[in-house]
Length: 322
Length: 310
Image 1: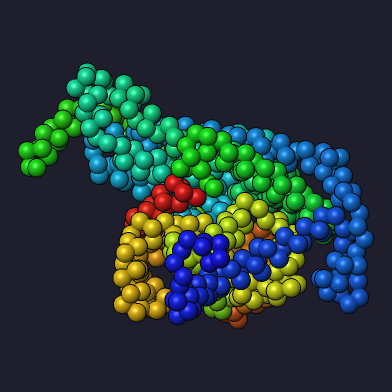
Image 2: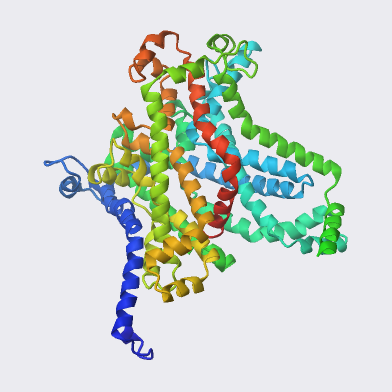
């Protein structure tokens, strides 16, 4: 390295050794994390070859031996993805749910953040924010119990009220047509508080003198929201929007697996990419096909993220992910 | 300064939304806030409902009769239940301590501008955020090669490190630790580890608290790792996973009463299984609900930083 910089003054041997020592010590700090990344993130990347193999058990039945001895099958593991109607259903579900989450999440969170910032009663605003943020800290297992308390066929509140009113009782966990609405509601319930807090932090950061100047010029509160608040949020909205679009093929496994209680009759509206990969492996034990589906998801996801980031960099170079 | 503040305040009061609009805002936000916490209140009510009332009118906000049976059963049911509660605590504490240490150790060199390998380690961590081996290859490697199966390690190790947290920690370091401080410490002969733990750590305590809370929450709410890696060994399952299993098969408790200790076997006949499940849900949410008002501030700080760069 030093030879590359002939203009630098020559360093004494002791200085070089102390620099080496420093670099070594700093490397040793990063080493445990790097080792973790190597074993739990980079090693599995070699497992991608599974998508192109007919993985079977051989003797001795160790993972590496099985991988090496299994036959290459080219892209045949991917065939089922384009032939089975189930695969199209889950791709459709993943995309439609994500588009809905992104749009509704954006509009509602920005609206809530503006409302919270405009309330004159600061104590009330703080209380609303705290209550709204609460579900974000709970797991989907807990959330699934919450929904279960309302919908359960035998004890749930809604079926019992329907019985009481003499109406026909809906078997919620067997009726796929209700689940798009329920899952969208569950996702908003859990995540709106989080995005609201993010946007609210951005609004709090806006220079108050902009509002005062607008007020002096005779702008009403609504005009101030339109012409001061929203333009100030513009960059953040665009960035979060694009980054979310970058993750459009990734679904929240917990939401789609736990909340519908893994009910098989609901797959037509609850199956998404992540649950599909999991079930393809756990139910049929097909290593090749589930790896292929997972690889497809990762490759599309990678392309989306790169594309999203390129666009973000055009909009605002400082906010790009990389 | 005084006068400036007071005029600012007067302007603020004049420059507000109209009263009807404010009422509408209160209505919308209030209703949504209720929507966010009512399910939890409902589950608390169910956990105090008598089994008779549930049998007659189902779960209800106004039960026919109240009862603390569910809780007395929770306290009577020995072994597996408390074992799971203990497991959740154990996994959370060990996982949080180790992961905070790993995160700080990895983020600190990335923050040091004079560290030549900085770019490499940065990319090494970042790349895993945008690409990965996928669920199945990761699962097979963890299970067959790394031995993460049927043990505590399987529930702790896969979440020990997160590139996202590294970014948050690095940002905290960049905003609160001046480079001159590190240079001065080096000149005074402070070693790298000494500088990190004696000089830098006290300054970035809020950052460490944020990472610790995010990790603790993630570990406390974890069930996916148990779903993947724990098949037979019920001794290590956390409470979240126990709850999940209970929900899947309605009479899990009755069937597995031997797991829950000998006393449960005797009382399984008149077990308040419905309210008992809800009591367990309450018990797992209570630690979060109690600590929440205190840690909310830190989490907001962490998430705001994370969203800006990450």
